[in-house]
Amino acid sequence: MTNKNVFLEKLCMTRSEENYIKTIFHLGGNSPTLISTNAIAEQMETKPSSVTDMSKKLAEKGLVHHKRYQGVTLTELGVKVALSIIRKHRLWEVFLVEKLNFTWDEVHEVAEQLEHIKSEKLIDQIDALLGYPKYDPHGDPIPSKDGKFMEMDKQLLSDMPNGGLGVCVGVKDTSPTFLKFLDKNQIALGKTIQVLDIEEFDQSLTILVDNKKLNISHQIAANLYVKKQS
Amino acid sequence: MTNKNVFLEKLCMTRSEENYIKTIFHLGGNSPTLISTNAIAEQMETKPSSVTDMSKKLAEKGLVHHKRYQGVTLTELGVKVALSIIRKHRLWEVFLVEKLNFTWDEVHEVAEQLEHIKSEKLIDQIDALLGYPKYDPHGDPIPSKDGKFMEMDKQLLSDMPNGGLGVCVGVKDTSPTFLKFLDKNQIALGKTIQVLDIEEFDQSLTILVDNKKLNISHQIAANLYVKKQS
DNA sequence: ATTTATTTTTAGACAAAACTAAAAATTGGT
DNA sequence: ACCAATTTTTAGTTTTGTCTAAAAATAAAT
Image (cartoon, rainbow over the protein chains, first blue to last red):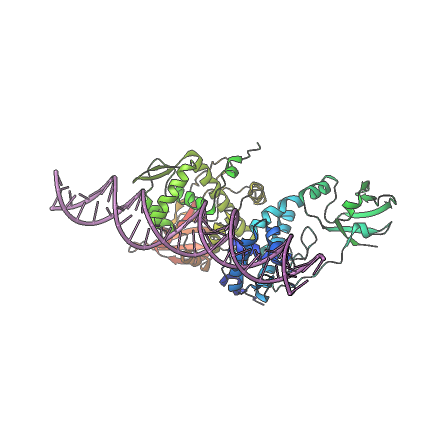
């Protein structure tokens, strides 16, 4: 029950190391498929040579498997580290939205900083304060302390049938421009959305939110996740 | 009313620079008296040569006045920066105690990390969530956004007269050993303390806390701040 | 006032994390 | 199987923040 995760503290990860691990995970480093040096460099907006340097360092620490000229995958330990960072990131995002009135588009930048704070008690207490949430404001699952998490049974609004009813649970695109558009149109987490009409010509939708009719393009609908209600 | 403090973001302070500024402030760098290189080095557990290097860097940034072979004082800008860091540190301490069940001796280490998070909205919202507190859990005043703060009208328990009644508002010594002693004896912020007896021989005190009698040494009493009630 | 002790600064080196430019390995096309 | 294009790595620099050891300035003491 104590679940101390002492190993994480002993690792003494630097901020930079943590960011690499996180990026590798997001690029699919969990599976046995090797992640290319170039892909990591592009994602992190850095140079491939820097990635090689860091890959060696992380391999020495036992966080990644590194095959020269091939790429990297995360070790079991690397996955644990990645999940613990993602857990922190997503819990902080919930905290910012639920307790501090942050909007969708404001949370990411601050959570990127907060995810590196080293205190097990801190994040556990934040978890408790929030009532042990399972999903973050973008609908992504929050890993538990022992690294388990469940994908939500969600679907894209663009995949809903005409007349379908759903609750907004997240977004696919997390860019500020998209998130600001949603805020401006009163589309937020937990809002009920009904599809009133689907235009045959361009797949644009007429939806009902807060008892107001709204027209949105297919591109918008293809980036909004809903949980089917009916 | 907006009070943007844009200058703080433009400064692009590193963690290390912020820690130097904070230390200089705590050593009295606010007043015109020069703070010696050695004093800063000792406080930060680093070498004097490192302090010299950083002093030059901070002087170039306009944060300190640096007189060779004499020491440093903070500029007006340096004081502003120091107060903004201290404001963040103390607000986070209140947050940890009030909202996350941290004890006195646990808050410092985590607040040392959180004070470096860069987001004006974050700290302003934390401030609001806490109801704009004026003092931190150690009884130290929290600077307002524009850098003003008020010392509390507090006194050491050892300076109270026999029979005096006070409310615990802070501590002088903030070492974990002392703070753990207080926790163990149910002495906490907001507790009412009455002096029942002062031993002439060694100035040890008999006090009343939670309707329980307790004997404490003069050294303990000389590190506990109370606000006089009667 | 001159020597001694202390404090502070310089100079040179190192580690982390990044970069550039050149070399090496891999991949793909024919 | 070979050549060209791409990807990855190596080698050598840079910046930030630190260190050690030596030199310079200040302070103290007789």
